[in-house]
Image (cartoon, rainbow, N blue to C red):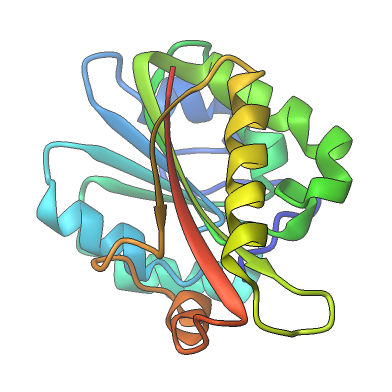
Length: 206
């Protein structure tokens, strides 16, 4: 699962402190993946959309190195090593067309930790252009690893939508499962246990 802990530093077009000025030209569509893991998703998206700049942020050094290797031949991908909680605030407000987060660490989506992660997503909202989009792919599991019932899943989905709506986002899609074209080590593993790990794709706009 992509980790989001503390960290600093950046690569791919300059240091993270100059990230916005270096790799986000104002005329270019820019998509940022939060916690990109080994880069397989951002590679696929960038190959299919060469006119868009894709920025992948990952804290883990090993996975970051794998992502750099995967995307080394792509001119529209920039890989940044560091904590997205530290890096995202450095983008100018209203400068990003879209954010993607696939299976974020519980510290950035868990209901019990809402007070911790709410300020970060308020920052994400501020960095989005209007209109701009945020796609969140996340999962619901039972604490005892029992199957998750439909009622529990539906209530959790409503809570998540209302939480993001209270920050200013508008929900334009909430679908069980994950996009078929999306792939990551954890995502592929979770798809194999749909009763105990129920995935949700939430599409939000500014």
